[in-house]
Image (cartoon, rainbow, N blue to C red; front, side, top):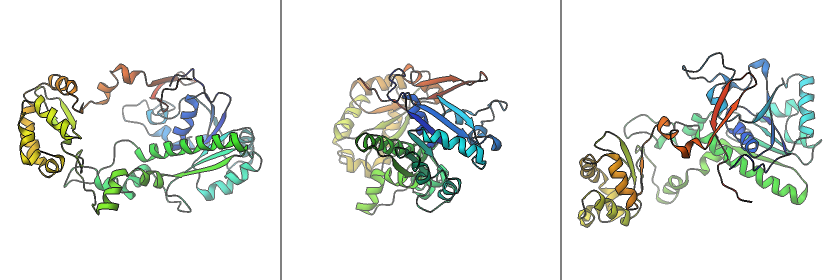
Length: 361
């Protein structure tokens, strides 16, 4: 998505949310041309993620890399909503706004008069986008790792026999942000038809459960409780197997069909392997995946990764190079997704886009 395609130019959004999910929604609309006003309580240091710094970050910087990740293109104002004067100033902004993004607890929102019913009384076209933790009246603190644990993700992540592991990005927040953006876009469409605003609520819980996909179906239909398998896939093999090459570099396979497997075997000079009953079809390969890995591992080490990837790519075998962040952002395909911005004090910041679809109109 190019910056010059400002689809939401003229739209005003007031962001009353912190951490990741809510701010990611605000940044999405900022990337598409909306005016986004982020409200932070300066008396309490602002968005808590300003302080979530790596040891290598400048302690004097007003923002952390984490904060910068979802706060591009916004105008920030300081307001303590416990103050009647500040609350009225924010309410005045909201009376002219199209969208509010918030992650208050229900009780706090009502006490402050920042709930949907109170704000919509003065702005009936307002779309109020609410991020919740567990949903409903459950107001337990709901950080991403808590939801990864509670919704089953950690139980199936990590290596067999090891500790449960969280995913290394705040995936539940990101999933909830996508759900909330979708809900807001639907509400905007409905407003063009009816003139009415809407309350859009998404909980981290619901977003997580809705994203369990095939793992949920494996339990619901087959009674299978997923177990930690590292990067392996419970239904497909070799899928998720990691192999090291002669130069010490790693790649991962994603062989999804028998035809892919036959092509893989030709690439590594094992053309007869698919004829063996243990590997002739996917179900057999899943049962015998450890034996299969023992056969393939030494063969992969006879190629450099560059050589082997050229063969695999040339024969339509799904496989990927395992890259670190430095290697990823050395690629032009990744660099073009980086957004840069200097803060008012001159501090340079960088992050990746949240809107990456291509739209021609």
